[in-house]
Image 1 (cartoon, rainbow, N blue to C red):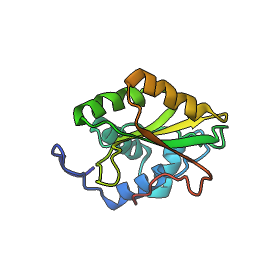
Image 2 (cartoon, rainbow, N blue to C red):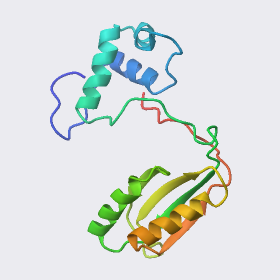
Image 3 (cartoon, rainbow, N blue to C red):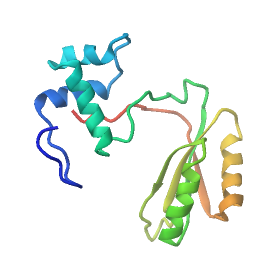
Length: 166
């Protein structure tokens, strides 16, 4: 990243760094030297690739850099987004952290409510078998006391890709 990053200021990337990040956001080369391969494609050195990714991780811009499991292809074909109603915003954060700690949950968000939609906490639950998501919802309800929820079962996956920034 160029220059010094101030807290809460988005980084400014060079064109070479943008090329590196575009490659890092796609499938990594199936090779014993993926960073060197990325560097060659981006017109950089392997050290520059590693330094950029490490710097973004250490700076909190990215949480992690690793493999993404395609849950449907791995046998987790029973999935549901569950919208939960937790009226107290502080409580929603506390309960959301408990929900997010569960291994069946890949995503957990707090979102705003609307007059026609009072749900503010969302979880994405993955299961291998019919009924797995229902079981998890029931367990979470018992553990947290949150009983007002709507389950939106996935019928078919239309797109599953990582975000492309560059």
